[in-house]
Image 1 (tube, rainbow, N blue to C red):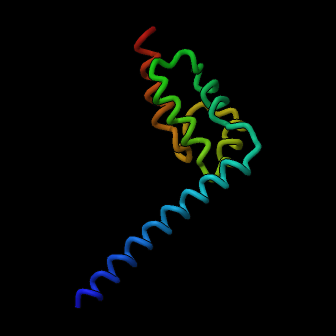
Image 2: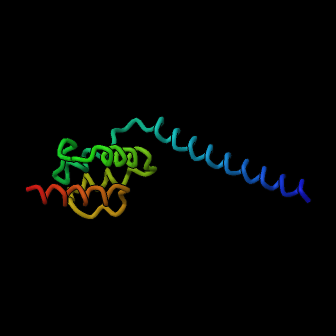
Image 3: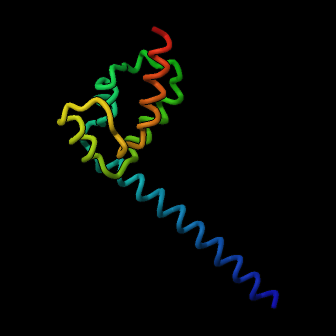
Length: 108
């Protein structure tokens, strides 16, 4: 009975290690194969914002990391070409842009 429990625990831990390793490898590969510039800064400018306007640099770094890890940058490119200023539900940083715009409007 004890050997069955120990075996199940070991298998569970090995499964977790394999899954975490797989996610890390996929993320690393995605970053290393993407040579295109990040759409993040173009989207930031479209919102009337500049990196130097943002007070919380740690949040900016996290938002840039989210953009770099995003698997589908095509909707961002299409949104930028369209000329729209609002409506970016596809973007992982939509909330970041909204908060940054509100913070900027409160300063002025």
